[in-house]
Length: 523
Image (cartoon, rainbow, N blue to C red; front, side):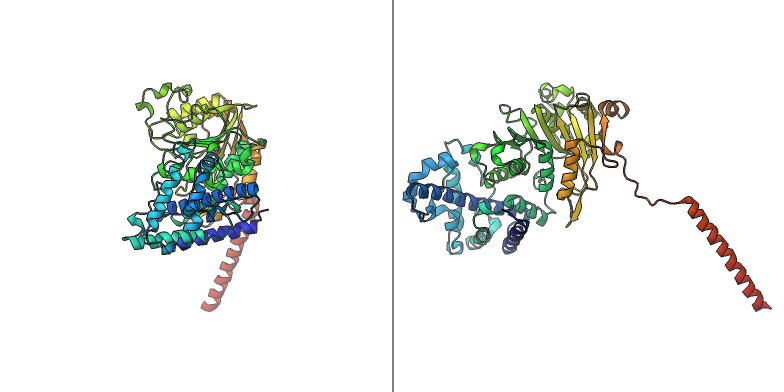
């Protein structure tokens, strides 16, 4: 059983290894590009170990030969197993191409980068023409092992590549499968911290801290022990989707994980992340493209669990495309989100694809709660139709590259009352490093409040939709309904007046004493 001590030790080991690799390739690989090398080679190690372990277990069980090792088999003998392995696992790697064999003495291979490039192409190629082709196509596109970024000449490139491989090899967790931490999530988060200045500036990549992911997933799961399908229309690296596997167990997300991502690098990382979390190719469907104008999961909706942290206030085509107002996702509100702020277009999309007994939890830019115009009309639609279950104001400085206090909107099509729960969670954090962080007690407090729909002075309040709409013009800002605790010092006016009287009397007494002293001196 995992212990917190083991997890912290492994996390420290992972961070130390990443730092060591970064130090070895410093000055060559651009800081933010570096993360693709780390995560892709972590993935390469994982799938190599996973495939070898799968074949070893099957062969040992079939023959009773406990000494069988796929890694030591000849490539010619291994070829016989190709078709069956691809059918079950979605890919194939020859023994000579396994990470554990390449990583034995990488510095001694004068054509290391060429060999690694061929291996990555062979792994992708093994799925061509099979059910897993779309899940492997272009998976290693962001890792150019022949790039000048690794060095000016072949020797320099290979030396740096060998350092990366050795660093990943020397992570001492036994098998990657046995690691007690979320390798990908922890590695990604550490890399975000290392390169915080360029994080968020790399072509639209976003990352949701694991604690926020956990809060969103728990809110959507509630008392359920399983969900049918989970969906994220702006899935990034897939961390939000995978929280459901962690909390419920992979088998309890019955029909799998669905997502769409517009950024090609993050799209590849999401698919890698699925494999790293033991989600087989037939259990996830991640599409690449613009969800708002080209949604790729019409045949899979509705979903009974939706979580998302879509990009804040990005531009979209909006009313420049006259067909969108007739799109069944957006038409019910009678208006499209502004072209300069797509936030509520994502919200309407998710509501449209939510099942009748489903729930969605969406991280939002706070402006969507109070801005006027088209956004107010969309809020009116959401409130009047009683789809808004809760609005949670989060602490500031939780997200990488974003210091503002974001919020969560919880949507449901099966509410049992006509009130909205407002939660002020702005003080629910601890300061860790240069960021604020939701701690387990903070997550539990917010989750329990939302789940039980309880009111707590200065923290949460239930407000009828008539009050939100009529008196407050569909303003969903938490501060409108939850009064802040007055932290100013309480002053006792009567006591203060007595103290002032005492000071005045003492001042008069001192004046008289000074006057007496001056009179004596003059006399």
